Amino acid sequence: MADMPRTNHEPDVSVIIGAYDAMPYLVRCLESVEAQTIGAGRLEIVAVDDGSTDGTGACLEEFAARTAIPMRVVRQPNSGGPSGPRNLGLKLARGRYVFFLDADDYFGEEALERMVAMGDRAGTDVVLGKIVGVNRGAAKSMWKETLDHADLYESNVKFTLSAQKLFRRDLLVRLGMRFDEQLKTGEDALFTMEAYLRGNGISVVADYTCYYLVGREDGNQMTKKGDHRRRFDSARALMELVAGLVPPGPRRDSLMVRPFVITLLPQFGPGLVNQSDAVRREKAALAAPLMDAYWTPEVGRRLKVHERLRLTALARGRLDLLLDIAAFLRDKKEPEVVRQGDRILLAYPHFARAG
Image 1 (cartoon, rainbow, N blue to C red):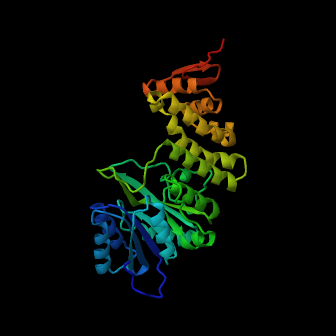
Image 2: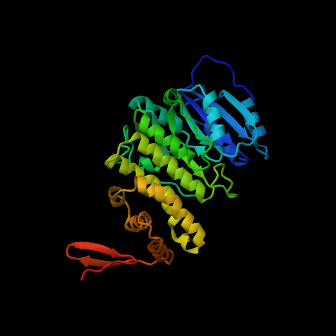
Image 3: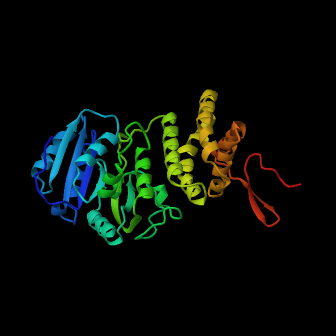
């Protein structure tokens, strides 16, 4: 472990970097921290090398030896995912805020200065900075406007639950928040949603690109993709968290859209047609208790038609109907538009025509 210089000064931001075989992407990542306009005196870096085999640890230590930013480097055996390194980094952090920076990604130069200014001005506990993808996609719907106080229930901030946010450290310490190391995928969604729900508000910096989310050419992102069982574990954990903190009603339903659409529904997409009957039935069985507990007509009304149809078929145990809709989507067919009185309907498979 390489210790950062001792100082009584509390930095504004602790940048926490968990890294596993991150070369050569790590070089740009670190350079982007060093280039922050907020200045080295207001930062610290806590970096955890998670058992890398490609020189990542040496790169971190070399950077720590020369940078003006106080920096601590910890090298440990591989933990199998991003949660352990992030938790260790959080334990060692001293800043008023923390930011979890993935070693593949990099900041815009003004990112931390703008986000800290926003958090201080608005008094919020979570600040979202605009994210764009580099060689990969990135969500866009939540970056339409800069907001001092975003409405979690009515805005699209609920659809960005990755850990790449500015969190007020006092909130995380006070609540004893940690990333779930038993959850092999979706652990960042659980952490971020809890901070959204239990914190003192959410701000959005949308008028400046704060974060560049990089798609690696080797596909070796630190976050593990996992199999379908892990996806259901992730959906279950997030749904249980929301249900435990938000009473039944429109607010809960608005938040449930996220795990239903982003985590659960992709398990029942066009690819379902090519899977074995055993896998399909296992997926339906894993989904059944979640549908029974958390699916409501109000959740359905917030979805696109094909999303609502698939989840309604799933809720009713009609795997046969679900497969027909999945095949329709696989073949990229367009539903016929049908007018019934003053209503405009889309004729997906098994559409019942009036009369």
